[in-house]
Length: 172
Image (tube, rainbow, N blue to C red; front, side):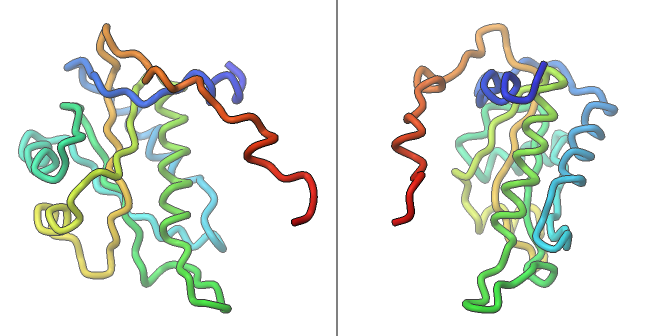
């Protein structure tokens, strides 16, 4: 499948089967995140694999949007490892973590594994349940698993604004 087709067909899966993801596929998904571009290639991402029964119970305490996924990844960044813009000191961490997560979602889709990027979580609960160091900033939870037989895209999935609305071809 070519990239644009993969990107268009991938959707947020909110209904997973119980089938476990093979370890080699998990490693491939993690590798896709590892090779994702980050500011100055500082790679501040910190990813916590959530797959044991105990860890999944903790995960479910942190979000109502867990979708009973059989595997999840907590994507954070280490604020001490980020690039910082000199003009206003903005850290690259959120952007870096989002790029890493996007790479992992696309690799998962290419492997037939469904995913949903979840920002609807309780940060304090995540910090407490997973004992995050103070310098780790949680950005999202990535729910992963094989889509259930009834999994389907959200009705608005294929509704895109036209490029004339989202892109300016002229200077402002």
